[in-house]
Length: 363
Image (cartoon, rainbow, N blue to C red; front, side, top):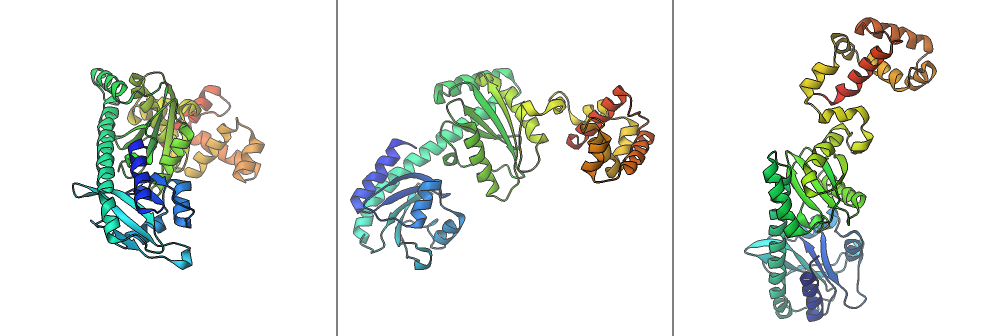
């Protein structure tokens, strides 16, 4: 949050003698100022959670605030405990960047008084537009960190060091969703560098910023778009020039994650092979005609995977699959017939286990 924006909100609260809240156009909290003890559940939730709920957003937008060029009065709603408030659109060059909210249940703020506050809103919009543009510029630089050409990555690292002065080492997180629509720059900590690259949402988190909190926030914001999120993480990247390799490893972790899951590169085990080659090459390397035949029988493939994951323990495998041990023995014989592999042979077991482990992640 820029100090100038906080100053503007403080000035607005003093000028109009009412509690003030500045939110961006996606209803994420930017700054707020108290004036007296007046408060309601909407303001409380916005301050505590740093954003308004989707219900509040929909309710307020029905009053036309997104297109308004002058103050809009939002009436009270006693059933929700919502006080009346005045919305001053924060606009610059005919673009709405946010909203300045004043709690005004008694409608004490007159039209001339509200008009005096509009220049403050214009100044806030200018600052928000400038910061959004700066974040967009940084986003392009972060994308250059992920480029194929080493010289491009080196130049981007130098430019980002000069512009953002991020603190090493870095954590790289990749979030995969069906939609590559980027996150709003106001939605994440200012220290976090972010971009969308090859349909990945990429976050570069400096050492001074909590990674888990940042990743959880980014996940929630993407899930609000009703999109399942697969996330992968790699750390540490000692320098910005190491972010490229960190991204490649983090995206492998995201590729291995289930919807709603976060995987760390260090937890992948043999799945790290996904970083070394493409799907076709790994298929040719790890699959045999026999394992290909087995994969056409999902029940048998599941049985083989469980048996190998449990180190060949028949009792535990039968319990895990909820089948009788004789049924398991029958399936194991059938697996050997299909694959032409012997489950008592260590190399054959390794071949089969590797093929079954990688197959769900290969195109």
